[in-house]
Structure formats: C-alpha cells, structure tokens
Length: 423
Ligand code: SF4
Ligand code: SF4
Image (tube, rainbow, N blue to C red):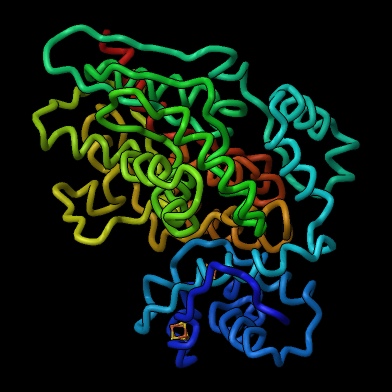
C-alpha cells in the first residue's frame, strides 16, 4: 500500500520481535492473538510499508483500531519502538478508506464536531432509553447536568498576594457529560488561592479524532484550543483529564511542524498545559501550601491510575500514597477520612483509543479484568482521573453480579468535597 503519510516514524525497524511487550498489552491479553499485540501490529506496519501485505486495508485497520494507545508497550520495549504513534500513523494512512469507520464511530465524531453541544447531549439521552440501548450494543454515558461552559468565558477570582493565575481546559466530557468534575476542579484551585480563567472558545482535545486517523480535525481542534488561551497572561493551563493532557502534551508536538498554521501557539499551549496532580506538585515547589480537607464519612476507595497518567520519567514519590498511585497521591494525603486501598496490577480499564466505541466486546473483556482486580480490594468507591476511564468504570453492567454497583468518581471531586466540609 502506498505510503504518502508525512508523519513518518521509522522506529518500527528497531523491533527485534522479542515479545517483551506481550505481557503488558491489554488487547493481546484479552484474546491471546498476535493480531492484537504490539509485536503483531509492528509486523503489519513493517510489511505494509514494504508494500508486500496481501491483506485488505479494513483488516489492517481492525488490528490498529483495537490498540488502546495505552503506551504500556512503549515503556517496556528495550528498543525504543514507538508503537502508539506508529499505530496512529498507520491509521492516518488508512483513513482515506472511508469504509473503515463504523457507524457508531462516525456518529460520535460528528457529534463531537458539532458546535451545538445540545445535539451530543440529546443523542446520549436517546441512546440510554432501554430499547435503543439494547439495539446499540454498547455503553453510552448519561450527561450529569448542564454543560459547565455555555456561551461566555468564565472567570473565578481570588484575593491575596502573589496569586497564581491558571487557565482551565475542561475537555468535552468534563464540560458536557460530567460537568461537576469541572466545577470541583475550580473549587480545588480557588480554595488554594489560584485564580482561574475558562475560555468559552475551547473545544475537544482532538484525541478521538487522531485515534481514528483524522489528523486534519485533530489539528483544527489543537489550533482552536491554543487560540482560545492565547493572549491571557497565565502561569499554567490545567486539565483534570489524563487523556486531554496526553493529547496536548504528547501528540500536539508530534503532529505539528514549523510549516503548520499556528505552530508556535500550539507548542506554547502544549508546554503550558499540565494535569492537575502535576500542578499541585509544581505549585508546592514554588511555595503554595496545599490545603487539607475532611470527609464527613470515612471512605475506603481504590484509585485507578489512567494509562495516560503514568508517571513522568524521574518522578520520585515523597509519601506512601505517592508510591502507590503516583503524583495523585499528594492529594490523597490531604483528604482526611479517605483510605486508599492498593490495586495489585493497575490493569487498563479498556477505554483508550475509543475501544469501547469501536470494539465494545473486546473493551469489556479488558474492563472485566480490571473489575476482578478491583473486587480483590473490596472498596466502597472507585476513584480515577480521566474522562475515558470514567466511561469504562461506570459501565458495570454484566461485570458485577447481584446488582452490585460501585460509585465511580474523579479524585478531584472527593478533594473538593473535603474542602467544602471545612468551610
Ligand atoms: S518489546 Fe519492542 S522490540 Fe520487542 S517485540 Fe515488542 S516492540 Fe518489538
Ligand atoms: S499501546 Fe497498549 S494496546 Fe496498543 S499495542 Fe501497546 S500495549 Fe497494546
């Protein structure tokens, strides 16, 4: 197949097929089939780029589209094979074969692109009506309230000296589907003396689009977001979604080059954007004292570490909770009454790369393994820090028997609740 994709990465040539990446790959472990493994995907890319592949584009796409872009293989690979971006590049190459998109995927991407967010919310409401839900064979989250950002910029001022000023990037899920997470993030920031600016002109981080090989829409969203925050004198741009930070921090610089319109704005935005947990660590280094809160009732919980929130190189845990869950452990130490229970493996939740839209049954097999791990700790609540993980973890149908449903929340919401109790 002709390769006219300008996003070339030759690291697939470094693969020695050693198989070290197999045990960590969620899609491979769910089906034990090399077609769904990192090594198998590299083999397909290698042969396809050599022009020798006797397979249809739709078949190659099936292997690529079942990759969760979790990055677990990249971390373990001794030869620096960049599997995630190689998979994305292959999808970009295959994207012109329109038949590769499934109706559900097309519908989601169209709804995300639509400026009238009411369409996305209405579609999700209809999808949750029992007969439609049954027909759709999948999970559709229900919007939990009115959108956080509506038709104007939001400004949250605080008083005091040497105030930090941050922008807040909500991402489309924490804006439209779980808006309370956005509100709780603002509470956590303002209670700690951080003024927050929320531009109305921001949009999706673009990850659903690049995950489907639509690099054009991805870049349009990146530029829209960079422009929305440009011109404001902000110390940081903060997000509470792990997938949004992965998209802006890791993928924006990969898919923009100097010849692209808005290159410098996008790179500036990418460098300034930081996930909420890294922000608290950074802010503490420059003298901010992070407030403690108190829960009314003692709670046992597990924290699911999103794949896109894996620790940056060089992270040094400074407390037992940080040793357990990384940077987010800093806030656990500030929430009186929250007891963190360990998870043995921190398996993937099954959502990444829009897997629960494209391959629902495979996604659920991966989620099932996550829930088996969670059950061993018998928590009262599941906490996490990513919109995609919240989708997967809230979809507990057919996973827990006897109608047992565990609440799933964002850790920032628990922190905000503990701060509100202290007021
Ligand atoms: S660990 Fe790296 S080199 Fe080994 S099979 Fe996987 S991608 Fe190839
Ligand atoms: S990114 Fe994750 S799902 Fe994709 S090949 Fe690597 S380990 Fe497997």
